[in-house]
Amino acid sequence: MKSTTTANAYLRFLQLARGLQQLPDAPQLDANEKALLEEVALRWFENRTMTVREAIGLAHLGSPATLHKRITRLRQKDLLMTFNQPEDKRAKYLIPTEKTIAMFGDFGKKMNSVMATA
Image (tube, rainbow, N blue to C red):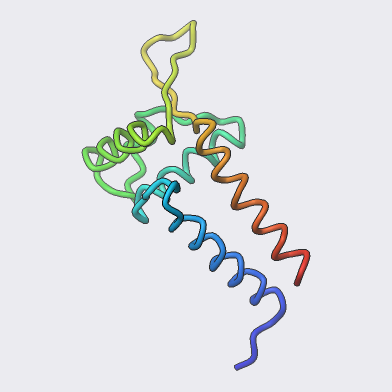
């Protein structure tokens, strides 16, 4: 079976992303932590910041207790932070940290370089 140029570009991107994740200074994330971080970051990017309650309700990523532990680990790794709206202190919102944005920026640069050579 012959692969297409776009398939090659995507596979090359995955290869580079894996390489970035294996660097000594890269945050060590398991697949579930990565999936949760991506969900939170996508909601933030869409200007629909996710609450902790919404995050622990993502049943496709695990049970509420498990998700709460993952949120805690992501906060300890300085990849997520929480904040409250001034008008409503009851809800905690999750947002990516500068470290997360920088990590995604590195992935974006790699993706752009792959697309430029495709």
